[in-house]
Picture 1: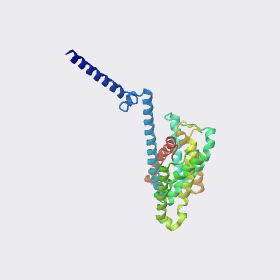
Picture 2: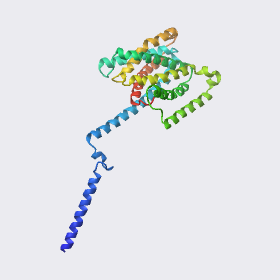
Picture 3: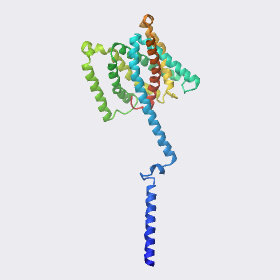
Picture 4: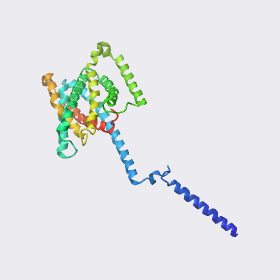
Length: 301
């Protein structure tokens, strides 16, 4: 009986020891079963910050896509009601500028003030920005929205090369390059089946072609601006700079194109004014989210 009792105690102690070792192994930092409990608090907070930053990046990209697509359609309707592209763009710039100044005065957002060190390099971007918006408006006035979307979707092809040549970034990976080739194939098939191309040839894509070329350079240079070179505290800074510095050049283009007489003779209805107001609201959204996207995705366009 004594031997039997000692054997039972030995087996019992061995089982306890085995369970204890297994429990410690499961709670070890390298164990996949309990990594979240073994990691220190600083690591957990870092992972939480990465998750939140990733969600903010996705939200910024989706918001920009929604605002960009909506503004194309709204601007097309506005130009149909008010055939004055520069006038519409000038009103949008003015509303966005006033909104940014309101945010700065009220302290609701961090908006950079005007500094000579930032204004000088921004003048080159302003010239490209004004030409891009004007070509965008003229393309909407003379062609359909689908044509503009196709050309705009091909901009990452040129931007990726400019990033590599002038910003020191890597070329697209094999998978990304295959996606870009797919874009080229889709754009080529669209052009070959477009009725305007069959009737007018290259003349049908004059404004949209100029828009494509200028926008590609503008997007690459815009990444340089929102980087650490100028040191903007938030996307509201470049939003204010882009719209305020573009007011006078865009208004000058409108005066040179005799758009003042066009606006004076146009019959502005309640619907056209409502469309113009809606375009201003969406214009503020696309200006802000457009500068958020290069910050969140510095290696893409």
